[in-house]
Image (cartoon, rainbow, N blue to C red; front, side):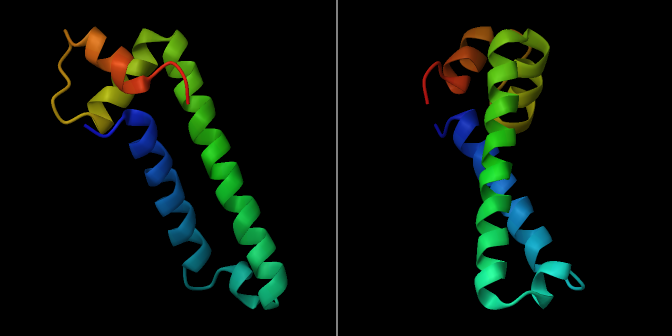
Length: 91
């Protein structure tokens, strides 16, 4: 099973990539080297935000449950251990 953390980070990266490539994005008008820097920073921010959500989920049953309901196919309200193991304790 792919862990919640992997799925959330992948989701954050995909959303960031989509927004960076969106038609009309100001990023597209930047010179290639500046665009690459902006894209790298945007991806780092997306991963850091995802990591912050994961960290919050480790301390909040409600957030952990919400993450599991989104990113774990077989999550049920009684699956606290599943949520805990999917979130992981060390990344």
